[in-house]
Image (cartoon, rainbow, N blue to C red; front, top):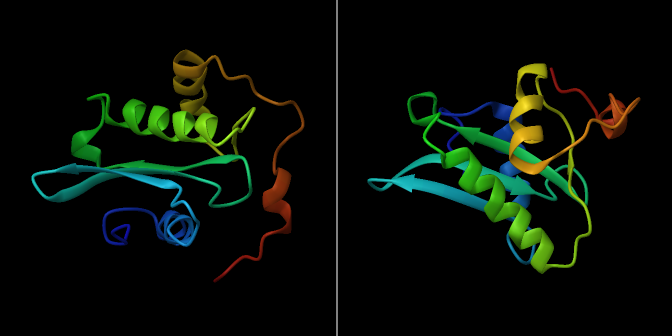
Length: 120
């Protein structure tokens, strides 16, 4: 599954959840037999894209874009009309807008996450 040492713990939990879906809703980037990134959908909620994680030394190489489009294509093939990116850092908005023509939904934060249980 997703390597907990390499990626955020909550991402790893969501990634594992996507492996319990039929069909599996996670794509993995591999280089030299090592996981270098992943992208999932339907991990937090139906129709949600994410999480996505790329190892820091593999970023800016197009891997995230390929994983994003793999998920979006799979969602399209499974008859999703839209995908929602549930949560992103402010500096990631431009990436999604540039790659997918995404728009920010006003008033959507914290959205579904306000009902999540926080584990400490």
